[in-house]
Length: 275
Image 1 (tube, rainbow, N blue to C red):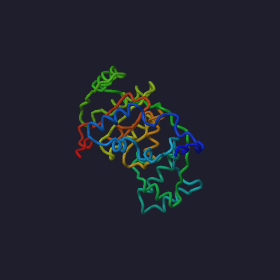
Image 2 (image 1 turned 90 degrees about the horizontal axis):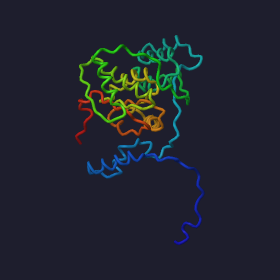
Image 3 (image 1 turned 45 degrees about the vertical axis):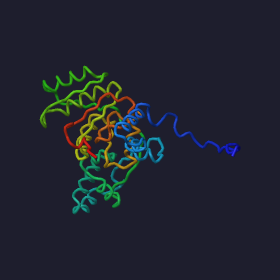
Image 4 (image 1 turned 60 degrees about the vertical axis):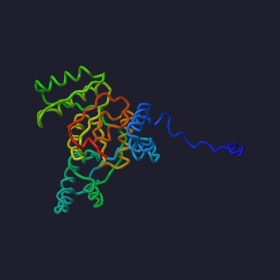
């Protein structure tokens, strides 16, 4: 009808002041759609976290931290957990390192079910904070060997331009420290870095090492909840996360100022998909 828009409804709120998807990500989506002959909608289903596709708010969620319940008798609680050694170890961990994030707990080798089990027994509880961690921790890494130092110098000389390097070395030869030194240069200059690992099983140990050096590090992998992935995605987009550690899908995360991508164990078949 001609008067269909004569009585518009009032505007309730402005959802976004800036576009959710950047021009760069739009361009990538178009290229993927054309190259793989896939509908654009299916491409965005891969590029965007599930929470984004479901219309989640872009307001950052507060960080949940875990600690023993106030007034808990730790010794008595530990005795009650004598048949659950991993829960007991987790409670000991939280009693010595209270106010620990979910990601740090996973990085320490514990699991979500163990965390939930302690919460159900009212041994621990979660609180939420919104204070972001500092961008770089004041931790000095080990002294570099001659080959490590040469690798750092070579890659450092190309920062700010596009160039690819292959770092070849056996397990234990010190490749990770080279990555960390390069990431440190990027983070200290205000940029961001992406560290890709081939399997979710490698994420906790890698995440723990990176977070020790760079507290403002987030993770992205299939073991996280939709809200956790969405929060990490937003942290990378608004720049509050300096480093992202993730599996292959993390390559589609939108960053504010991405300056370095490290593909650890890039020969691993887990980075490939045949279907």
